[in-house]
Length: 261
Image 1: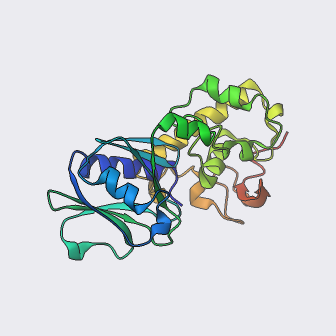
Image 2: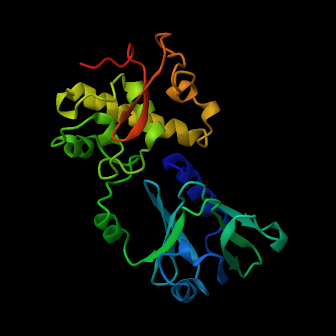
């Protein structure tokens, strides 16, 4: 599933290809991918331009020259594709914007878990879904404040989008691996030093992933992602990586590197 680093890459891609071009047509092969009516999308996008993008977690908000803001969620397999010739339309490009310059913007969505919506306000949308600031932008003070009343495992809290919007499963595992914190460590038992270590590791994992275009093989060799499977070898200790369930999610860690207090 596209997580924060992948969606950041999509944001950069859209910024460099699809902004400030008048939309001449809108097509959707499957209306189930639209959270507003087809008529509304045609009304609010045709003859308008995409003007600016903003990402919060896994959500991409695209401002337009009209009254509405486009929301894109990439689901499991969503991705943008900017192309010119009609015959180059990707097989799973179920939603397509056509620009007056003759180019097209397709939303590839093979498994159809991604979707588009139209909204009036990013802040209202964020509040209604209890989204925190983006994990890349959140401050240490806000991060600590979000954790103060939590009484559950740190892994589950890291994946709570009201705490750090955009952190997904593999990211949470690597954040805890980088900070040497056991995924079942209770938040209330973490020291200030521990909390800062988790916060700094979160920022580090995010920036490394973005710098490497979310291409895991290019990550530093001490990242868990390279050995994130049961029985693989921990980079630091040489012991086997273990797999457990935390908050209903598969979780990988090194018991000798991430010691539970």
